[in-house]
Length: 88
Image 1 (cartoon, rainbow, N blue to C red):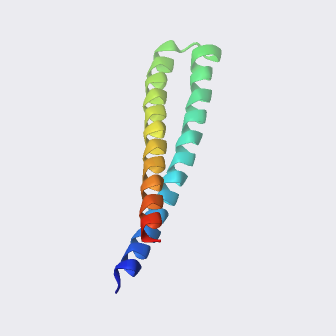
Image 2: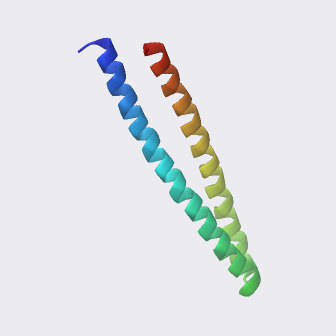
């Protein structure tokens, strides 16, 4: 197996991982939206402030996770592009 074939295989696997990470990001965004809806209900409609505060903490954790995941995907894509360009 040539070095170029190995690099192509590695890039393909890396692109698959990126695709799966992006899918996770999509679900993470959906989770943030759903948590926000719950928070609004607990904070306003149901007037259950202690639970709203706890949910707010979860929302912050989920938001940070989503931001870090997006950053990882971006950096990983840049690196894959760099490797592909060098191989060309």
